Amino acid sequence: MERLIDFSRDRHMLCGSCGQRFLVDLDWIHRWEQGQEKCPGCALTCEHEDAPRVIVDPADPALDDDLVARLSWYHTSTHPNWPPKNFDPAASLTAETRQLMGGDRQVADWATRQKRKALHVGTYEAAIHNMLRRIDDQADHGSQFYLYRVRLEPTVTVRTDWIIDPSNFVGDVMLDEVCPPGIDVVRYLNYHEDPGGISLALGKDAIAGVQRVAIPLADTWDESWVRNAVAALKNATANVAPATGKLSRFRRPSSPRVVASHEPEALRELCADLARRLPANLQNQFTSATAFAEGDHPVRWARRTSGLFKLIEDPGRVLATLDTADRRNV
Ligand SMILES: [Zn+2]
Image 1: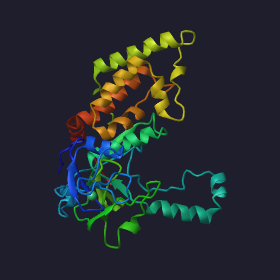
Image 2 (image 1 turned 180 degrees about the horizontal axis):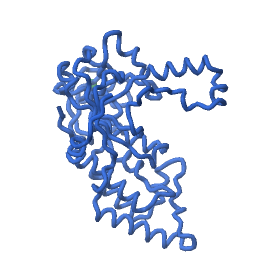
Image 3 (image 1 turned 90 degrees about the vertical axis):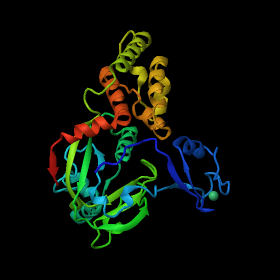
Image 4 (image 1 turned 120 degrees about the vertical axis):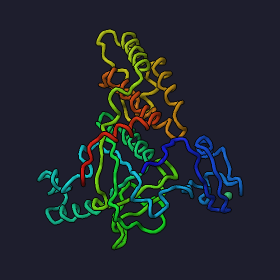
């Protein structure tokens, strides 16, 4: 069962100080984060500890215990076979690393802890947002991503109610800390991706099967945008580095923002046009994640950028492609 996908939907807010609940759009949240909006009940601004925060939509079908296992859930990963079978976190450690970690006993303890980590699934919007965050972290700038549609086992036991996003500072959740014995799945309020949406922390056994597509989808880019972007890059290359023809000016240093400021004006304008058509909470992340980096192939970069945009602009096409994908039992 699919939910309506709407990256721009209004969000519910709850004030921790005065208890006021209210509905806002993403532009309001954006202004709020800059200290330009106040709680309509008590006029607190975002700096206060008890200030309003995004809260679940009371009409979210994921709050219905009986629907959780019937809904489609999503996950993005660079792993081509997620969730991995017979996951052995220690398998890729070298002898030297094992020694540095203190020996076999410590490695075994560490591996056990890794295996206790929960898997995460969420809305389509959260999965795409998560991918942008990961690309933005740069380690995955050039990685192939996959979108997984996840079907849960119909017999899973879902923990009552929902909890606040339990991730620690590196995003890990230990399954047994959020799922007491006999519970397979816990719902949590996602603050970071698709804010206000419900995500699930769960173990692999709760997953019945997955379908997968490589993203961005092939052939979904906007050909005219790609042509213009490639032309802008080529012009800049000709003007900037005629001797070598290399795009060394577009070096990707520590901050992608710096790169953005080095992009030729025409390209920056094209990218800004794309970003402006996105919901306010994705614009910076998208711009940063898609910044042209040294070594990027201009045509491939432009197609990927346009294709990533389409994942947000036209989710229907992605779902239709997923519908034709084989289902793999987990
Ligand atoms: Zn208030």
